Image 1 (cartoon, rainbow, N blue to C red):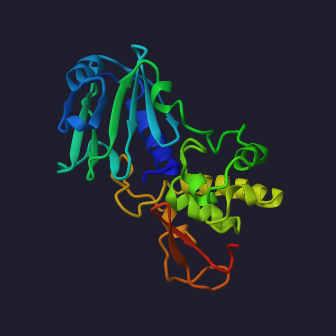
Image 2 (image 1 turned 90 degrees about the horizontal axis):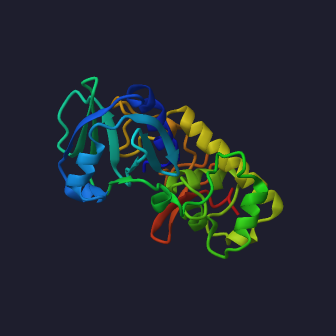
Image 3 (image 1 turned 90 degrees about the vertical axis):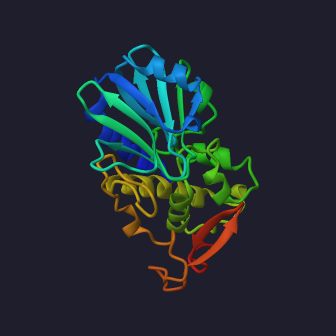
Length: 268
């Protein structure tokens, strides 16, 4: 968390407020947040630059700046970007002042988030896999990539170098929608199962974007509001509850140290 739908929501909701705005000041409360360059240089270079556009790559936010550099933000497990928060946040790690008097605050309870200010964004995001919502990400593309791997399909969906942006809960939801067990070997899926999984991935992600992401833990939208995607979850975070299709109790197992939720009857 935040995963692709949450980061896409943040991008969409922030863009009207920050595109065209100039950074007038930066306060870093936690130096570990800034990965590149050193904190003093990061602040000095960022002040005076305007935001030309905001993009998303996987789970990364990319602010394209007037000076040709890019500000890249990864919120990791618990980060949030709040625009003009009404109350001070004890987990605030950085604050960006803009030329219209507004303020963008990065909060992070777990202190895992990262900031980069670089000329070449590929140095940070270049190893990411394809975007699952891109037109060029077809079922054939997925099939070609899956046939090279014997790892559990759930593990492959979480591998950001295999496919970008999918995290734990949306992988669980996509596998349930495709009736695929999370422990199935990636290269064991049939052509039909791959087509079903490809469609499920896109449907699950688009649906979550439409409901502004899932606020199951710390995720907040820029205005402090919550997303509602989790209200539509079928298996994710629902251990012991009944499968909406067959009534079997949802189970949880650990796959490479990540909790995976699934229906033992519907997913084979």
